[in-house]
Image (tube, rainbow, N blue to C red; front, side, top):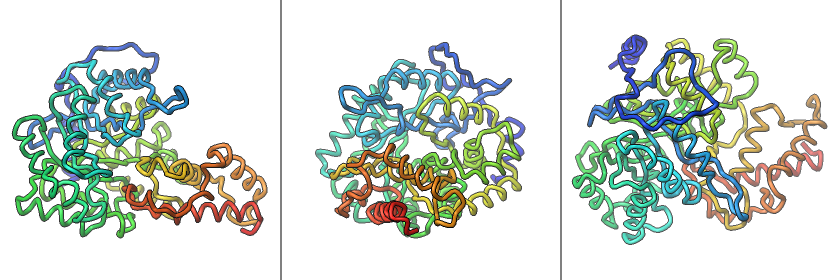
Amino acid sequence: MERRDFIKITGAGALTLGAAAVGCAPKKKTAASAEEGPGQMIYRENPRNGDKVSLLGFGCMRWPMVEKDGQRVIDQEAVNEMVDYAIEHGINYFDTSPAYLMGQSEKAAGIALSRHPRESYYIATKLSNFGDQSVEASLQMYRDSFEQLKTDYFDYYLLHSIGRGGKDAFEQRYVQNGMIDFLRKEKEAGRIRNLGFSFHGAKHEFDYFMELYDSGEMLWDFVQIEMNYVDWTHADGVRNVNADYLYAELDKRELPIVIMEPLLGGRLANVPDNIAAQMKEREPDKSIASWAFRFCGTYPRVLCALSGMTNMDPLLDNIKTFTHFKPLTDEELEFLERMATQMMEYPTVNCTDCKYCMPCPWGIDIPGIFKHYNTSVTEGRYPQTQEQKDYRKLKRAYLVSYDRAIPTIRQAEHCINCGECLTHCPQSIPIPRELRRINRYIEQLKQDTL
């Protein structure tokens, strides 16, 4: 189906199905509301099995956290409230992993979801055997996921982040240890309903996995890719692939697509002021984030776009977007391409705050440092030269906010370039080099040598 024809169909509401189509959950009263007149969650039908999947999926990598007994733990009460509200308003796809939130995500998801009828939601989780590829450790991780998620089957199961390390890493993690054969048998037994993979890597690596599919050696049921209006044509082409290429390759094979990082780790919800102003001029009543989600939903092969929602505010806003969904026009797609081009002019780090690099063996808060730097750049609080207007004010604000956001012992200057983080980053960011760049920038600010 051509995208132009799809827009006409969705505009007529042909793909909109009632939430009752996938079961109902106990309703919970809440003071907040996402309602804005009549509207229903948009569902996409998985052509492979008829699943009616909510176009908005709940990514469980960013559950709310609290301090308890000196530890950062998931706020289970807040998670329960969010899951209740999500299911009540039609979200039925929940994506987690044993690796998320230092191993806490699956358990929290299991507690929250198991309070609802099993047929009212789809669970997606992953074999995240980055650290230990042995068959014993991999099997234990797989079995633990059933216990953590309180289920006896997985709706969508993924080989996690293949592409990292290329063919050799894939062979070690899934082939040589016999796990891919084991997972195929688990699918035949019904304990896995759909088997796929999430991808991070270069073009030749993606092409290799497509060749495995074409040859019949690996019959994937779906694929999860990073896709947003910046990465559509502005990925670096070395460590990551333009999403327009990934989409086209999957589309021609009629493989359902699940989208991760539609907001680039939140950066497309907090764009630079000049870009935000242009978006608000066009859609004053819509959020900045809604542009990114509408971009993903405009493409018909997308089964589900995941959002890692940390509190009720983005949950409400995203439900509003997908219950009053409008695909982008060709002109609006061209507008977003111009916005993406402008975004590339900002010297940010391509960090999505996934925290796979943590814990750093030297205690450095890698994602915190990148987040502070990126936010300062995109919000215009970024001193660039001593000739800049308000340079002194910007300099002080940056240094003070950096010390407040990142404890001294966890700042970039303490990186020893051990490289432990490099193998864990799905974006293939040269983390030690970026930490040195940010630390060098901070020292230049302190010494007034910019």
